[in-house]
Image 1 (tube, helix red, strand yellow):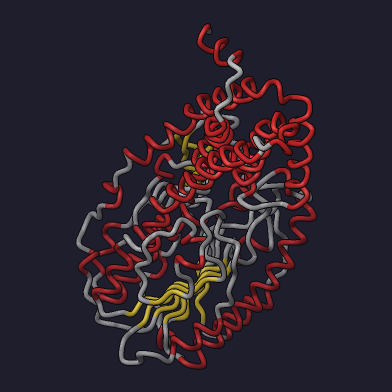
Image 2 (image 1 turned 120 degrees about the vertical axis):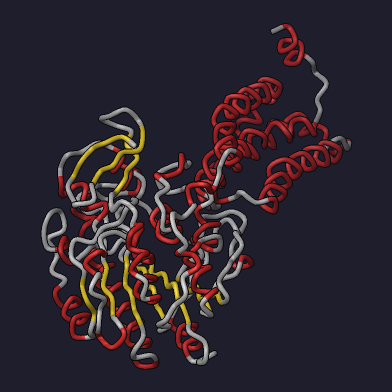
Length: 489
């Protein structure tokens, strides 16, 4: 305490130290809450420069400039102004991952007022900033520890399916509409929406519809990570319900599904409307991608720059006709209710908005299917959603509340699966399609004509992180038979 008191009373100011203090807590806060979006060395260098070097240099240079005789009367206000300005501005970036004009202007105004009335207390301001930084370490250190201790042992396969040799090699199009609920659920429960027109379109287009299909996990990343790994991760002690450790790295490169396609001579394609799956600039293992890491800003969530999917799809279908192709196509509609309580308009209004987005999704899906069938009529087209639409909820965070309401649980997990089989002939074992985790294992059994791969199907269960109403943890929420249950993993 004596050291702290001496520091506060010491009138000698260190401008560089002031700048460092203003940025150290925001950078810790940003990493604690967004680690999986910025877990690269390039991000680390960028954030050190932006959050630490920029305020340090600005404070030093500004202090020297304001030491001139003509500016000396304002010098006493400078460091407190810059300290508050940088501190609040960086917190704005940390919370919203973007600059919001009116909020930024408000921050400037707050900094001006604070400089006028608090300039004599700059050391106290710095002390508070350092205390916050120290407290922030209690959140950051566990996040870093989880990353350091991460192991991919969970991805080890029980057989040699990663060496599968295909006897059939149709072009395969995996189309993923975000949050698209299954036809068996959409006309009941919290949905009660008429989607018969699109259902009829798929049936007339030769698709087989798989009722009661549902996701294993509740978010795009967690669902796709298990799908492409063909193994359960049980959220892998991840950072939150949407982010899972190394999810983007697994989905975009280090997964057995992509490897099997490549070993069988497939050219692989990733086409998406938004670069969400490469938000942290992972290695892209696909031979073609309509997004590169250069398209992704260092600050953001992967939704800053969008692209349409139809042109790259049309162009690439006609290329390399001698090679079989695999496509992973992401359509970010109809989506789900807002993630945060602050952004919801209420369950009923959000349902109406989701229904409008469903219409948009249907239009996009029809066009995508038409493009494929016109140019590649005997291909395998798979429409498989990542999770449900969360209709009935005000916001998705309500999923963390324990519930025994069957419809509440299924609004999270019910998801679409429809497949257009080559020659219109589905395999005899297609009744095994229940959840995404086994989809590619079943497809590989079909393509390789090796049903022994079906001996190692994963548990067709759905899992959820629960925080309210039960001890915090991961629970099996739906069992392999589709019954709502509640068993801690």
